[in-house]
Length: 184
Ligand SMILES: [Zn+2]
Ligand SMILES: [Zn+2]
Image (cartoon, rainbow, N blue to C red; front, side):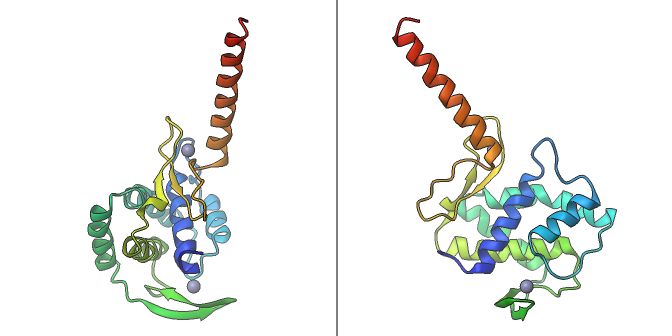
């Protein structure tokens, strides 16, 4: 594992969240936000109301911009986000999670916590010169964020849907090539 657990969790959450904006938008209700919140193992304040939903939805383009940014631009964004959220890194331990970083109080708005945690995770990525772990989906028509923390860096698509669609397309291309070669 190249990064601390909380760094990887924060990056996964940010990429997942940014990718909910891919059409068809999959973050359009408070119920969907709550499912995401529970699924990603967030702790702390969760208002579960339409204001919070609107804030998190509006955050997605900023997350995407940061995650796929070129390194020096990412530094500018991270520094601005850390200042904006008044991030104050503190090691904490709670509910089955060993020591990890929290950067803002747990009663801070969810959107601010996500922003601060994503910025802190990117601090690790930038310092480790691992920007290549992040990129845009290899599907030509998709703007999804790809986060690849695997050892062999084999991930090219943002989702299994994009991966499968391209696998099918590649298979069809091979089939038609073969039938052309056999004179069919
Ligand atoms: Zn925590
Ligand atoms: Zn994709």
